[in-house]
Image (cartoon, rainbow, N blue to C red):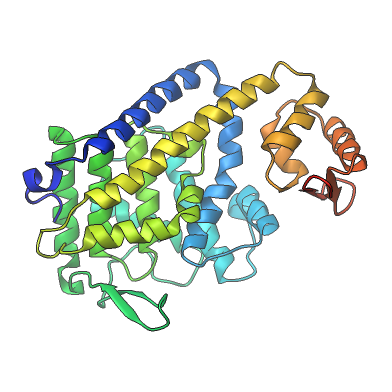
Length: 353
């Protein structure tokens, strides 16, 4: 419905959104520069981002996996063994994201591509992935203590028609440059979620396709910063902006701007984080290896981390050097650890213990 009356949908863009889109485009230009000049550093950032992105997008839908298990499942790849349904779905998200991230060139958007993403999501489960829904589904909330219907997608019998029309109209709008790429991607995702084309996994499919379409348009920040983590951290705003933009969607009288402003804000902040991460990493390069470990642990590490996290962040620094510095920090009362050795978990302490 966002691509039926283009003038109504895309006219009247809020002026403040233009400023945010400019920030994103500046970030995209810097990203291209770094890709040429700092490929090893960007690969290090990408390695750090993988687990966070898969974990956060899964957690938005209530699919949670212990952090240690999450790392092992991602590192094991196709050899992973699963303990429960959550781990199976987590691995499916890993597969779907890696298929997109590792592609030399992004596929054109088609209905078969959308269904292939859904198939990847549920490939490790006994669910019927890769098919459109065969029953009506509703978007509901229990936040107020009772069941509240938020939005009713089109009847399941019309799903294929709606989805096909959306893909065709979106691709035409992209080819005709009817609006900024970020605006078009946001409108596509808004409509996809309104159609709710599959029985389960619509949110995850939408976030994976967001990444895929951003990569296709040249915006690769999600490789190096967990956009999904930022969405998880602001999920009330995520749901609220979708709710406001889907109001009157069936009548074609909705406004794409609440949702578009939310998504653009997330992307702009992600590019800011990307720039900060690059600056921090380049600053570490001027230090000795022991100094790099100390500065990373004190200023850039998460509150809880493992030896493998330090390896990813500081390629070229040996395990003995990392262990030496971490033990010194522990002796200074700045960290505590569960044990010594490669399987230890390190916890940064607040000042004064």
